[in-house]
Length: 121
Image 1 (cartoon, rainbow, N blue to C red):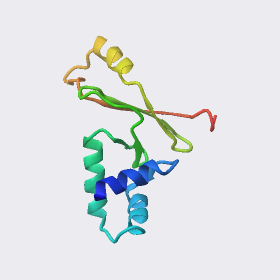
Image 2 (tube, one colour):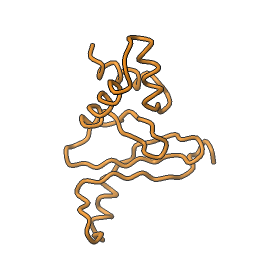
Image 3 (tube, rainbow, N blue to C red):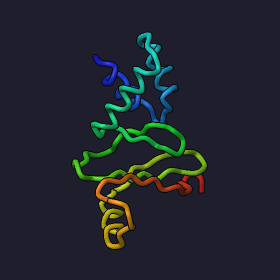
């Protein structure tokens, strides 16, 4: 099993979002490895659309559905507990395409919405 497959399995088996170093810690229980190995695996998984990066708290979340090549990523992130949910991004693309933003091409964007989840509300 490749490092990328092991990292993906680690993310799949957890109920919370993990940082790169939390993933590294779990990976090191399986085999001795360096941080760059984890970062390379995470980059590959993001490129393949299997995971998403939560830029607010620097964690990684499993992608819940298949993406088309031209589909954008939208995450809702709880500002209290950090829980992350992937949202249907086509709706946001339609809204943003009706009112273009000067000097920006919105054909490839990612959006992160910060709010309070129902559990923390």
